[in-house]
Amino acid sequence: MFINKSMTRRVITIGPEAAVLEARRKMDDNGIRHLPVVDEHNKVVGIITDRDVRSALPSVFSACKQAPEKIQQISDLKVGDIMNKKVITISPMDTLEDALLLMQKSNKGALPVVDRDGELKGIISTPDLIRAFINVLGIKEPGTLLCIVVEDKLGQMKKIVDAITEEGIPFGSILVARHWEKGKRAVFPYLLTVNVSKLKRKLENMGYTLLNPMEWSLDQTRKN
Figure: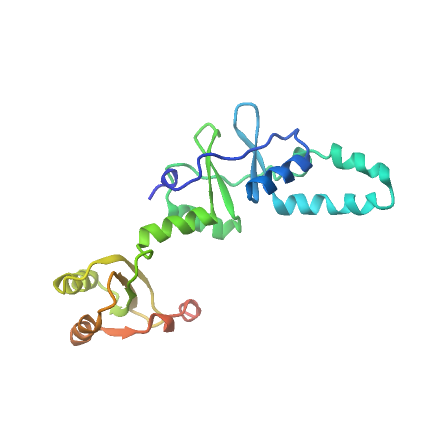
C-alpha cells in the first residue's frame, strides 16, 4: 500500500519566522507532536517537535522567575532557531513498509511526505501506520491467529492457503516471519473465525508444527 493512501493530507505547518510559542500553541490546539516547517512555496525547510519546544523553553521560563526581562527572549525565539533542518522525508509513492523501516532506522515518529520538488503533500506518523496496518491485516474483525512452523522452501504457503480454503475459512491476512531454527519459517494466518480445531488437526496431520503465537519471540530470532 502506498503512502498517499494512508498519510494525513491536511497538515498543520508553520513558518521558520514564527515564534516558538506559536508552534507550541499549534501543537497543543491540534493534539500533535510534529510540525513541518515550510517556506512561502510550501516546501519543507525543517521540522519542529514537541521535544524541541520543551528543550528550548524551560531554561527561558526558569530565568523569567529571577529576570522579568527574559520574557522578551520568549517572544523573540523563532522556529527557525531551533528546528531540525536535516529533515528525513518520504515520497507519496513509497510504501507503508518503506515508512516503517525508515522510522525505525531514523527513530522518528513522523515523516513529512514530499513530491520531487520538495513540496509538502502530507505527513505519515506512527498512528497513521498503526491504522493502516490494522486495516491491511484485517484484525479489526474477531478471529484467531495461528502460528505454523514450516520448512523454508517453495510451495509451503500454497499448501497452507489451500488447506484453509478447503475448510471454507476466510482469513484477514497471512504473514511470514523468520524462525529461530535454521531452515524454518513461521507462518501466521489470521483467520476470521474462532472455530479452528478441525483445521489445526488437519495441519498437524499434514506434518506441520503449530505453536502458540505467544511463544514465538523476536528475541529468539535475533540470536541467529
